[in-house]
Image (cartoon, rainbow, N blue to C red; front, top):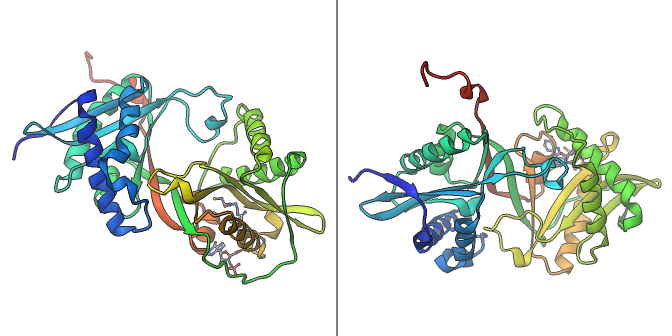
Length: 342
Ligand SMILES: CC(C)(COP(=O)(O)OP(=O)(O)OC[C@H]1O[C@@H](n2cnc3c(N)ncnc32)[C@H](O)[C@@H]1OP(=O)(O)O)[C@@H](O)C(=O)NCCC(=O)NCCS
């Protein structure tokens, strides 16, 4: 077998890269038939690949064997300002590599190819001060997951999808009033969002609660509340807000789910003192009924993979995983704890 060589990607690689992505998507669809059909064609990936190749913050390497492109890997340098809304979710000076940013040819050894590509890119990123790397994989791709785990990554977040028409069983029916929030309800919305952040701050998630992006989060929610297309639902009990589920389009739904028929569930939370009492299921039944009537066939959301509350709740209510985000943080002491003489 010819050895693998890596090099910087060039615009002329776009067709080969799109073809590799379509190959992977066909493999993914054989396991998860609900994934969007159109990405089985290379042409459907082309604009995403062209975007990667034109992105000045993206580093892209291809793997070659006997003159053919047999894999590629890309990552975007995230340089968000600390007060940016997205900084609530994306670590400073980190690398993001989405599902459009990597593929390995059918029949190739994924670990062999990704290890060669990641070695080159990780060197570049670490030298430039990017120590946290996040990559996405499709659910159930055991070979790809094994490759990334071998390279030091662990599961951080999961995206999951459910058909909106599937019934939501109400094990504990509860007398709540569910209302579509308006911009005047922003304080109730922010209080429930704070409650969700406080949950994620705890073990085993340990997500930081940052002050800097708080004003941007407020603005983001006000803008979303003004949007007539998708609702924020708030549940009230005895006049008190006790839970919410908020929706966006396209939100953060991964590209492998058909965006045209999907709605994204952004934040789902129930007040601490009434959790486990049926409010969450009641809200979900209400919001899935809204989504179905509005013509959205699927609903997608993310949860912290280790969330002991959200993960079992969504998985127990018909959401099936489609994508996992894997994360690795490199020990930054490597920059000063060096071999003698280097
Ligand atoms: C997740 C959450 C929104 C669910 O709302 P809720 O009102 O507590 O849920 P309900 O009472 O309607 O439904 C509970 C059911 O969900 C399932 N469920 C919830 N937690 C579960 C767990 N830890 N293990 C197994 N099943 C669980 C069970 O079917 C449970 O029924 P049970 O109480 O009879 O066992 C709420 O618990 C919450 O706010 N959790 C903290 C924040 C969070 O994780 N939000 C999601 C972010 S992705």
